[in-house]
Length: 315
Image (tube, rainbow, N blue to C red; front, side, top):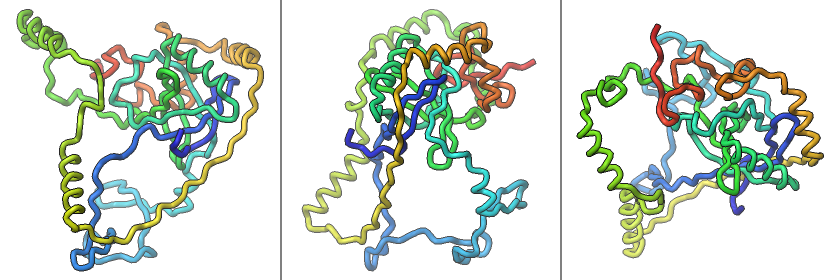
C-alpha cells in the first residue's frame, strides 16, 4: 500500500492479537482557498483577536477554559489537560460483537483501512473471515492522537475496515422534529400512492458507482485554474513545509491460534448474553461504552431501522 501508516498496533479480542497498520481510507479532494495579501501575494494567517476589545493577543497571554455558565469560565492549565488525556496504547480493544446491521449510519465518522503487519496475515484472515461468516461487527475502543475513539471493526471483501464512530451523546435525537407518524396509514398515505412510489423507486433502480458522480463546482474551479495557468497568470507563493510523521514501531509474536481461542472462550465463557444474541451488555457498560440510560440518541441495539436515529420511548 502506497500510503503511510498513521498508527501501528494490534487488534485485541480475547487473548488473540492481530498486528495491524492503520491507513486512512479517504483523501481530501476539496478545494483549498488560501488567503493572500493582494499587494504581494504573501500568505495571510489567522490572528488571535480578543472578541470583546478587538485587540490582537500575544500567544503568551492566551489560556484555555471551559464555559461552565453563560459568560463564566473554568480555567484549565496545560498540565491539567495533559493529565486527562487517555493512556496511549497500541491496541484496538474489541468490547463486543454486534450484528452488522445494527449500527445506524449517523454514527459513522471516518473510515480507515487495516493492513496486517509483522507476519500477521493468517490471524488477520482468521478475524476477517470469522466476521464475514457470523455477520458481526466488532465494537472497539482505541486511542489515536491522544484522543479516545469508539470504532466499528468491519470485514469488507478482502480486508478489514476500522470506522471511527461518534459517541452516543454526540447524536441528536429527532423526537423534537415535526415528523409524520410511522406507517403509511397513520401518515395518511393510501395504498395506491404507496404502490406508485414503490414502482418509481423500482424504475429508478441502479448500481452503486461513486465514480459516476462529480463535484461540478470543483471541476469548474480547477478548469478555470488551468486556463489561467495557460494564460500566464501563475504567481509564485511561499509554501510551508509539512511536518513529517513518525511511524510507531511495533512487534508481535504469532502464537498457536487454536490455543488462544480456546483460552479466550474459557476466560469469557461465563459472560451473560442478551436474549437477542447481541453480546455481553453488562460487560460493555462496565467498560465505559455508551448505553441507553445515559443518552436519548439511537442505540446500536435498538429495534428501529439500522440506518436511522430512533425516537425515545415515553413512559
